[in-house]
Image (cartoon, rainbow, N blue to C red):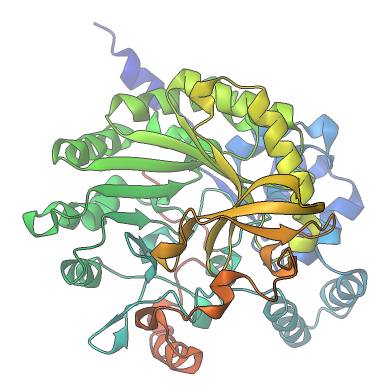
Length: 478
């Protein structure tokens, strides 16, 4: 009897990444005009660039380049740098070919891009035995983020990614953990934690065996208070073969079932930026296989200029996801880091887009929340634009916060048509400051930046090979 599943796997493509050094080998490289090729070679010196054959063959419409949204999502553009910065770097890269000068200029540009926003380096890293715990962040009471070192790359990089320093070799600004031992020890000391989010990079760049080495220690009876294990991943969009035809795809789904059978919820936090990512048959098959394992799949993404400004696209994405069994979760505001000036939209436009998309979908898709800013004090949602007492204001609330007492507490900011982030807003009704600006941080989470960087610097050599811009061929289970 013919084994059709086995035949499908034998015919399945093997994952092939392309980076700045190898993109010229891709057949589509010749389709790019010289100025677009130049932009990739120059800007990719500053920001991470990595794509793969699935993204290039199935998701990008090469007849619509450079305006195709997936092209803009994955390929660098010259406007991501200020004109004078681009010209200076272009001269160094293409004319002078001065590697020392390039390195100095690239470092200057990166440090000017707010590489770790929202207090990630100064306020989110927890302490244990009077030392910062490498590879962990603990911003909110119930949730710990875990960054396994083997998951500090992705099947392809998003040009807007707020974790871009993870991928460009900025070792002193990097989060990663070699193993889960310290995570488990920390969780045993914190029974208030119910959720562990395994993130990166993309943890699903790892083989199933490597991923299991991080997940299975969380299933022990001593960690019964851990109810939810989340995995942040873009593989659902950039390499859905991970769940369907990779050599260990069945093993991966078996691992998902093992977590579910242990009594915990396994949630994949799937990053979908555009409905084109969910149109291919294999992408839809991946969703069905994930859901059939007992895991849940939640859909989230930021609203990004040039890529997903059309409310109809969001409505298509959410309704398709719901039909397949996924749960719309968040529409985020693009963070104030990296080339944010290229991608950001005014908050008023973000709310208008969210409201229009929300009106197009049924109640099953209205599980989505947003538009939401992951700012220093917490996740702030724009609930509306209203006029109160003759003053036009943004109605805001915390969906999550450093101080749990702030959650769901409404507050108001003066309407500003040009504001793109929480820091641009000022209180309404004559108030001098927002209520959360006068309250202290939880001291448990405050670490002097110099001390943290010193601790990380001592470990930098050990981490030097993990997750760099052109890390290339980490094992993906293919």
